[in-house]
Length: 408
Image (cartoon, rainbow, N blue to C red; front, side, top):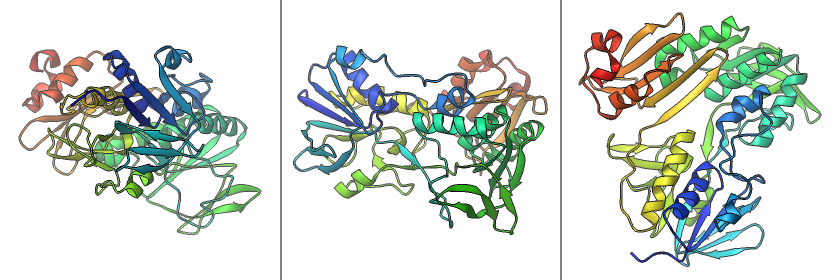
């Protein structure tokens, strides 16, 4: 494979920016175009639902200082959206009238918040949280609000609920699940998050659904639940998950996976010649799991971006990193490594769930550690990573009380 003369990266978030950075770090001297719809230079998303939303910072974690892209000869085209791919012609068209030929193409278009498909779900006064501008607007709304409704009890919903309480608002979270985050951490650990928010004054309407958003084009005034109850609110945040931005790829004829992402092989390649996909949109065939995995967390965006650069330049290495994410809510901080199958893996807890000072392990029927989550414990990160990476077979008793560094 000869070195490409021009690489186009569509999507200027963390994944795309990491790919552009890694290309230059590997000594690539060709043309790099980094194109993104966001008007800001590339930034990381986690602070948007944490430090920025809490008011601890007015800025996110920028991927690089403002001058980095020009200094490294990366053409950063912000506020520009790719509108069409012509794969046969190796051509990208954008909404500013630009036409960009490529030798290699990276799709890193990220995700958008899922809409709430109910009457009133498109009212202009609703909030979502995905971009820096979204976070700043929502923070200002939280600061002025007396009553907030959060629709959704996933990571964004729970982190936003914590931020709204920090700003003094009365907060109600509505979700069809019986427990927050249960689809990720299972019922027992999910109960820890429910109790944490309850202790901090959040009202739960779990196992219930929003039937209608109340209001008019002049403003939102609350929600009506399927059971008929109405909850008055100054602010309604829709946080029911994210949908991968794959319209561009789908229209161009690229294969989509069952979960809606773009199908890529172990090396992050699509079926189209010289076209790759990374980050939220990549339904990646992971050699460890033997099936496709699509992860919407910043660590995957960063590491897939760095990894794809080598394959763009001629290598053919599989992406093997395991999922990782973290959260901070009130006085709880945690990190999660690996990927548990909640239908088959058993939970082993080291420490005290009630005190929110523990590490949770998920163990396969074969006795391998598939995932680990440390909550308010920060000394064993490397050991936990080693246990998950190595698929260590460890007894429950050793996980509960043994030296993690030694058993890993």
